[in-house]
Image: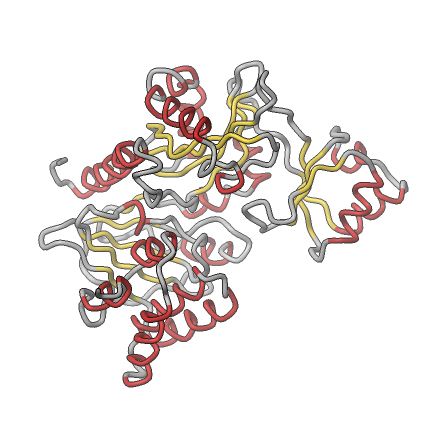
Length: 411
């Protein structure tokens, strides 16, 4: 039997990348990455200028958790060239993505969103201050895929003066809008929104938190109004890394002592548990302002992530997610229609995603808004038979957005 990784390599045209989506699918389903990794290493050894091979090696390392080496190999590839392609079908839409170097959460996951569409994806990597190549391949539509992060801020700032005369239609075109999607920036954007609760996010440094922990000042004084309990996380962290609920100055002192970061977000803790004691968190993509649910996670813990919510092992949770997806348009989306419209207007981007919940008083509780949240269709169709149709809706809407921008008739 042919190794699936080697089969991917054999069907990839010379000079092209296998790409993030295909490699992620292989890793997600427990495929043995080693034969493909070894083949790519051998190919790069024989052809040192094989930048596409280096880029696929970097992606494999990032997917396996070796971030340091993955980013180092990625930098080596980008030292050779800034433009990479994952080919699609003949006559398919040609989508050019303006990207930032980084891990799998640094950019809008276009390779996932376009999976199965037949589109050719051309990734153009910007330099440290938003520099772009003098010439880029021809394309039908472009997409600014750089996500908000501390590392990407200089890139977004530099791109702000470079994109005004782009030769093709450009979506998510305003890098300064993306740069506003910090946790505190989103709170500022949504201030006064009547149907949305976006808890204040305060940037506090280690010294300030240490003084609060010692009782030398109070949280009320530092934040201008918030008190315990709070949640704290290092600025720049994702997926719950370093995120903890703190109920007292003593908790805060212990938290700071255990963290290496120098700057933190501190926000009031909102108890969003339902009457059954369970917490529910949704990931929703907004495509040209239209909301599409991507997942629902159900957990007895307040810090909900899809992977820790026992969705694989709990048939009741999966049944609830299936019902939520089936009724989303007529129920959740309609109930929060004003909130979604306000989000689209205030954030002002063609595409972004949110993690959210529902407060007990019926408002949309917003945890995060970002252009780079992972949205995928890799879950087992046997275990999650309701997901492929729902994710096809998301991907079809996204492709239609690109086709409208490119002036192509919708399929």
